[in-house]
Length: 390
Image 1: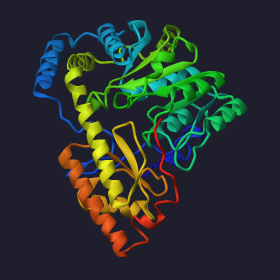
Image 2 (image 1 turned 90 degrees about the vertical axis):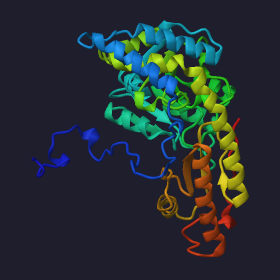
Image 3 (image 1 turned 180 degrees about the vertical axis):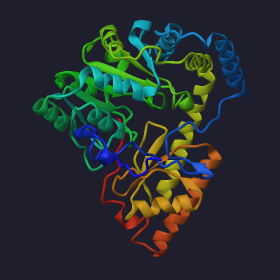
């Protein structure tokens, strides 16, 4: 019904013309290592707690949820305080349906027509999408060929274009590299307005959180976080902002009423009660991250050091065909369009072993001369330096 109408026939805003939605392949594969999820399913104790909590919440399902999510924000504040070592209160937290809703709210408050947003690509694709849909000019400061951020260059760009919003991921997505605190301070000092530090993968890094800098830059620094990664709650869709109370108050101006359902709040509270058990799996993922990277390098691949639960590896003469090789062998990873590199999420031991088996086959194809121009070629390994985390 209505199939004859296309999007070009609709009176959409000009800024949306030729815009493409965010996409990530949702394919069936025995081993899925493409979207940086936790590979560990919830424990039976957590399942039972969520089930019991949601069941209790159903008694009030005919009523609107707690509009301010007081209990949830309070528990998130306790969690952040324990994780960062910084005393964080309920007034410093705003919860949302995933960190993407938080990012959209930030753009609604600080972006818009006649304003600009800056990031340093390659970076998370949703920053540009959210900026564009909010009628905000999108600016790209770029990165070095090894994907590290040239701080002197970044500060110069910020000073020249004076953006209203700056987006940073720390650890960086897609490379997993960590920005040193001193470098982040330089960016905050140069920024004329708001700096958003996306800490979706912070629990996988030993580097201090940017939360330590909020008191120094209360009007500039906004930190977004998520329960999707280390807390293994991707299906629950819960993100949150950590910032000065004035920033939280500003974001409440655009927050929709009752945006977090009673069920979401109950499930997230249960997940936080089991945070210590869930986070115990992070150390295993870090060990696996190191093991897999070492073996890949022994095979002749380049691996960019990462502080997250994923890493980029290469170099490939043809990333698309190399990605297809993995999929043909039952392993789904990610082609982000970065020349010569693919990204893989760290999985459980058996999943990682299968990924390594397929990688070894790919390496053998390259070194054996079979379809050499399409697959990994170790003769090119020295052409781009390996990036190191700080």
